[in-house]
Length: 104
Image (cartoon, rainbow, N blue to C red):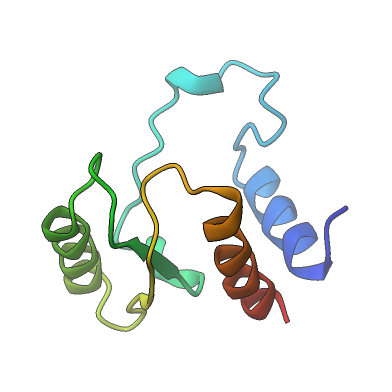
């Protein structure tokens, strides 16, 4: 169930002609790259996974750094979790707490 923020984001996406339901022509093949003219409009949080072997910390930090440079007025809020790429149930509890805090 979507809250007010989710409904506003979906409404904005639909007004821009984006396929938010995944049923149209866009689908997985659509170009999902963000542009610097619009990307910085929504607050962003990055969860760094310290034991991620798929996306090593150095690469995570580079992605954060480059995204922040592209939108200096809307930098990531970075949170670090002691978890691998695919978190275990115990690790996901701490991730859920972070996400829950962001939603309030």
